[in-house]
Length: 227
Image (cartoon, rainbow, N blue to C red; front, side, top):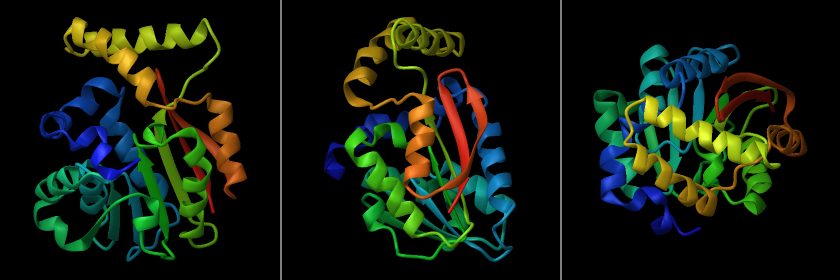
């Protein structure tokens, strides 16, 4: 995928970004906080952290605020989202280096930890394993990696049921019902959503160990694993 084809190259999508995760992702603020805590278990006070899918800057701000000694490299394919990240970070931006592109645009590291929140479902299936391997290669031995994104059973009728639950949560969170329903075919066309078992298998195949599920929020799952 070319960076200009990113769903977040649309200025309107960028403008709406800040408010959407809280409405669409159950426990979004807590997910960020849990990720920060999991990374901190093995990241030193002056650690270097890789954030894949850093556009918008929401998790960067959470991590940088909680851990004033950490330095960050954030990667995102959308130039507009990276601009938003800089605005979101404010004075915290001095501790963050932003890179436009995909994982191959990230420095070689080695990093003390890495995160990838609400991003991997945008990565095509055939690119998922190479992406995870690139993350693994950039981490120190034993470093934590936290990933969370859409993941639910893909066999029918479970797949359709989970999509309907995604819509129900969005509507209950204040999203217009027609807009929520309209989002489903777009998601089905644009996103590669994998079964949780396949997600864990890919993490292991990429070289990660001790893969553990730490978060389940309706249609979203989150794992911590170690390089």
